[in-house]
Image 1 (cartoon, rainbow, N blue to C red):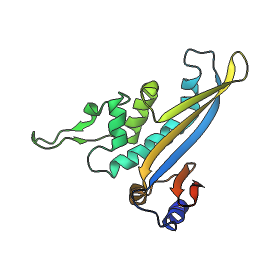
Image 2: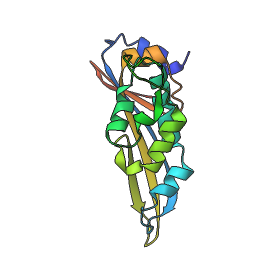
Image 3: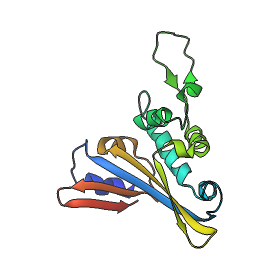
Length: 169
């Protein structure tokens, strides 16, 4: 079992408690480029991959379309219509075959269309800088306990009666 799970279980919080998961990594970039160095940061960090792996895991364990995947479709970062699985039954609810790699590709291609990974560029001089990409996911404690994802490198925040608890997974 992941250590973060036992820490959260010991808090005896309500299943509907919101857990904030944050993953952040950065890279040296040339900020004078048209994209401000964001494309270099996407290539040189694993923030988009780690976010996509987490969302892919959530989707695999969700009946229907996970709200985060639906939000990525709504903002055109991905197109769910590309992942409809044919069932042969026209009256059946559509099922989707979408992997974390599909999510990663969609976000990489449409980075500015989504709101889950933010960028921050600090300029050191007229051309060099540092770009930090930060992914944030809000899920319920019940979903976290159900899915039990690998959150190595993620920061976990949860509000308790005594304040906000932060766990580095």
